[in-house]
Image 1 (cartoon, rainbow, N blue to C red):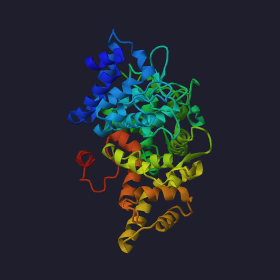
Image 2: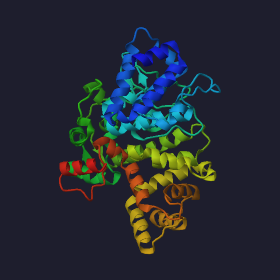
Image 3: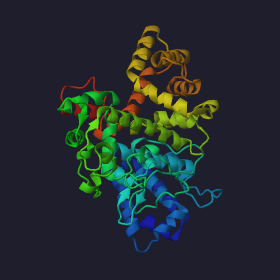
Image 4: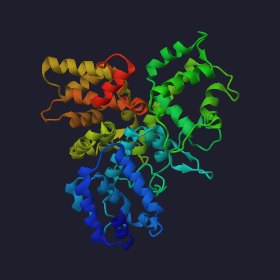
Length: 460
């Protein structure tokens, strides 16, 4: 790192190219997993602490992502020459083309979501800092912390968050999203989400909507269809104890009594906390929360407010929640899509309809697997018919054509139905995975929570 810093200070491009190439070649010797995050954070801290180097210079040259990409092994050795190339056609000197920077940061941020505790995730994706140093999320930050969203096609957005000591994403590149849904329980009107509210929201999102009534009834001691604040806290605390929220915090983010009494609890239980919450009220809130995440994701990709997202963006939204060690394979499939599908237009109604299809995944799986095992094939028309039977209505052609193209692995006109179901299930269980660290689909697991946890962790 001393040599790297020396090269950066002197702007010796040739020396830096050599260092980057060496870092790329040595990437195979670096540990994977949380080591990637640790390396990134410690390197940023060491550069920031250096008195001989002006860290702000990176905002002009953007050398830091290149250094990180090479030293962490985020870029293949075969791309070393591309990494070390200066692109004079861009407004400022760039060691990495925009598409490579976007891909590198996307994969790095995906590792943060998949492998880190909630405090680390919040620290990275919370972009608003108040005068007292406290960090908060905006609605778009919440989306980025929950869903692996790729930078939209045609945008200059490179990343969704940053660590202490790094340059924050500029506001003109990261448009802010308004959310009427979150404004309903925004007490002070700042539109921000605190750490405690973030923990509560990811707890809510980990609960399948169809399971809410059963959970509610089990804790409804009075059998009156309502719940007081004590019963409600008991549910959320129990869920947290079983999830990743029990991991010791490393960032200093902690809940406080004052923070816990902010908007969400006041929305449910009143200013004094004595109001009883109706099941219908909570059920409506939970469904609205899931719908709002879908709307925010579409808005992320429709950053020009055109009323549609590109077919390539839709394809990325379908596959971006796959396991980290599979993401490059699926991104390559997106890049290989036919041009007519990559440039297709997917409206919000189409996007929302496909999100609704994920809620019926079990029915879809039965239709796909039984038909394919019986006939030995599954063509595009068969997929359309299966979706129509499951949803009881027709779905637009564009999303289904794109999905079929992604999962026609052998290009033989047959859908890889098992692969499709696995990807959609992981996307639908995304909040649960973030909460507990493993997939909710445990039908083949041994009995008991901890044996099941071990089984699913090893399977991943």
